[in-house]
Length: 620
Image (cartoon, rainbow, N blue to C red; front, top):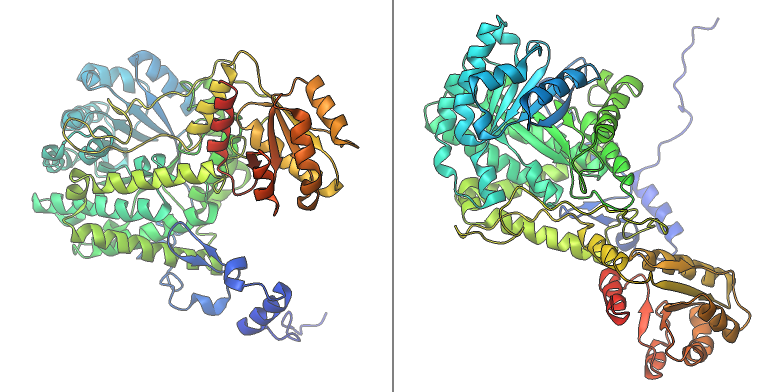
């Protein structure tokens, strides 16, 4: 057998970047490269249609290794094991304990007990933790910031009584007074000083983190990716500085901070975000001169967002959260919480929670994501995204620091106003279908009805989302992107009769079919019954069929050229017996408007406003 080794593709010369650009220019046939192929992101930078090795020059992570400073490639060197976490809202202690023991046998290895303040007692914690081996899993707690020190004291005493090896107990206590400022408008800044006492109380539990950065709230409020990262860094730095100023040694302070971050459906951007987050946080902590680089590791629990979840076609939420959890897993986070698909309209059922757990187990047990370290490392695309997101987030971080830091920015409502502005912009984009929500403003389920499902309003605030409370501090707006469409559709369902939208298809076969499909999707988003057709030979035939179908809306679907011939006769034949719509924006639109035709739907239409207007015309 020949021992000769040949290099694969040695006979081929790799094309240069300019050669690729020249080829693309030919294929575009004169079209503008920047407009056709370059993507301008919400994060404020451009994404090119292709990247090459030379584009890695200047990327800070190229020469980094997994498990080494600045940890852009992950905190671990030989695996990607993360905690599968499930949160438990405690209403009854014994029931919560039974649920915890049950799900620990179903793949969960991280719990988070959400406790009411009055539940924080020695006896209650003993009941809650009965049978749970804290040395073997991660145990997290969330309660009122005022009760966190007392909770820490109880936990330390309880773990000692159980004879645990305190160095093996992993978990966290969610102490985050700034979160209350942004979500409830309550000035809890005076509680931050308790953080130093909390850290001291947990001294015997070295793997317990207790100062939390809950930037998942920003994601649930609809922020852009760079905003979450930039503000999360400023948020963490605020706490780190406050703890150091209170006398906590920098290494100890940094090792006690936990980031509970959100993850949205933008797959590759989210992978890049977490990589950039570790890199930037490591640089921030390094400035405090910790005793070792281990203190520079960012501990992240990723939570799939509720902002893009929907009430209608809710099983699509599974697709969203699966993509989100994949991003988080591939980005090497420390733990993941998958939000159950039914959260927008009910307290998650046992079935929904089971599916949420299995989404992570699928990634571990079948996709083997826990066996790989920084699988995205070296990808020309992801490395450039990491660099670009880092630059935008760092710019926001510096701007926040320059104005007095994150605490001041939240007390002055600057952070909340920035995020609320983004929330409003994304709602506006959804209204115009510039942001697609599958099953809501794009490809809705034509036959679905709510069957009693109603959106659950946010319970984290005591007032209207996005407004100011008595303190004058503005709060985050947690209205989901689909909420406006859901309210419209539920209003349509409450009508005495379901409106019927009839497609009067005529003329050019390809154009009438395309426009009928577009119009059906456009109008079904309001809950209308849509009736498509194969085509009519004459306008009179189509109008007659529409009247037999008891149509409330008739949509003329044809080609732009043919509208000059068909639109006016169809409008007159209908004679105000139904709302008349032309599908498209033909060149003859002004002429048609002069004839009394008012309604046109096309890709540039504001879908939400159009549907609201149609409802008003029908008295809904």
